[in-house]
Image 1 (cartoon, helix red, strand yellow):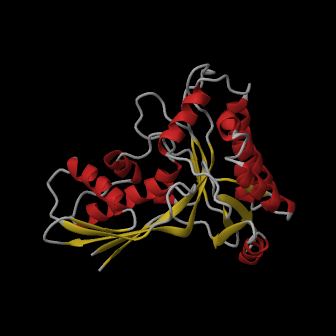
Image 2 (cartoon, helix red, strand yellow):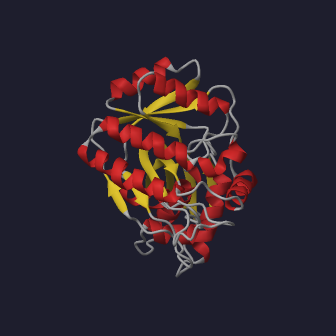
Length: 316
């Protein structure tokens, strides 16, 4: 039996949204994000008489497994695939990519297939079309920066991976008031609208400057205040191309209110992960992150996570 434990992904924002009115950027999308250990995804696979898929999002796991098998060098023997743990979809935690890669990895290991990188797995299960933060984060964990895709590239390459200080933690918060969730056709419409409108002048250059001259040096130095301010500014400005669809830099008033509430309590590195409604707040310790979750409990349900080093595989 093979068990794959994958992290969850927080996405801070994209460098460049391509489309009409393009400003000539050589690469599309790109971005910055952080891998965290909770809630994570756990998938196990064991030999069986016929293919079986069970657990949360079992139907998605089946699709990923079938995509993987369709390009396998040799038809793999049947497996029973169980999704033991998986977060809710469309909360900003990168569920699709982590589930797809975990399923692909579990099937590959259990059937004795070739060793594949996360980028190789992504190509086989159909992930990494836009962002590659979760792809590289599956293998490497940590703070991930990827520059975006050139035409013809299947997955954006990894630009840099930085480990955060061991004591830092992340409070992950989901608004309690039933905030809207983005995904599927709505996400596609938002990208189409953003790509068809003139983007704020110099936005891609500004986001690159914030990430490369602010966020990354602060992470390497363990400077939490500087890191937090850079993350917050990057995340807020990365929302500008989608402001017309979202109603602002964040995906709705519940998310915006939660970001403001956390900032008011003195935590600097606060923002919306991907399309939300999940909100992240980077804290200097588990106690600080737990305190923040408790203070904001009337507004959101939340938990404390720590930066992840990537997936792990266990064999029994």
